[in-house]
Image (cartoon, rainbow, N blue to C red; front, side):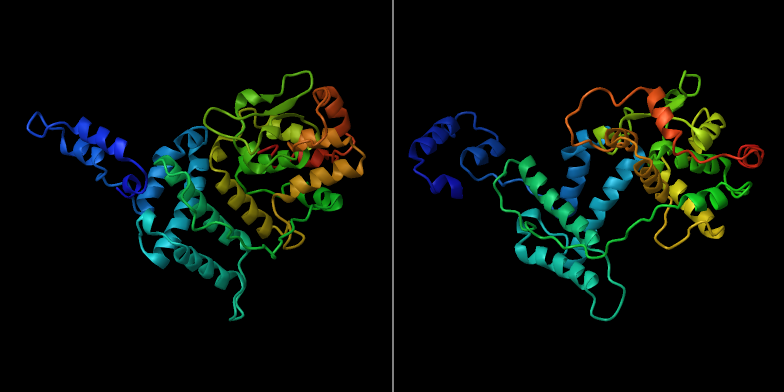
Length: 359
């Protein structure tokens, strides 16, 4: 109604009344009468209701290509942001959310990122995830109901992340003397131990190997290799992540023992991370607190750099976007294999006769 009386809309109003017609003749349903007279209520929802709509309808097409684990991780972050908002402000109607409510969320995180009581500060990225999730929910919800120009109360709110946790690469000597020692993983789930060995010489993200399908393990090819590919129900991190990686050294031996992949960890990469981290800590395989399972990926890139491997090839094998103009296909598998052999760790016969190769 406000919009009807705020413009020169006499002609429009007459058309509405004309469309309404004489009340004595077959009147329109009440919903149509309200709409024609500008009395219909604009659709709205509480923030928890908006989140349910967001996940079930607004981003349904984006979630369709994700695996159950990816959907769960995506939803968990979004729901956490809404839960924190509700704890601070209540389950408000989306139209009632103001800048003041957004500031309450920012203040909540500011006190945790910059604590005054001497407690350990949280990273700015945690607060940014909440604020970003709420900002996007607000924008997408009102776009969904046709109010694209509505000002976003969560606009321009962001923390600088001063806590930079640098992941350190494993040194070659450490990998060879400690991690590639015979039977070091005795007692660990065999698939987890083999997967760890495959990480060393492929530089893959743990989730990429945990979810590799049997058809993408090409052991009988002229150059044995693995193919990192998305599936209809699982996304990769980016388009650049699609790649073919030759299998050499301990990675080749590990994949020969796992020709069907690692079904125990498929769509359960959280379990893989937890299991390997626990195993490494129990066996003293992390040199420092800055080392993680992801350190294998950092080591792989370091080794390629120090061996003088071509920049474009390094990008291809890591699954990174190459900022240079794209020419060719990154080199044949034979070329890639020969280059990787320059950095491959030697594998002892004692290792191949021990667990997990001889489980």
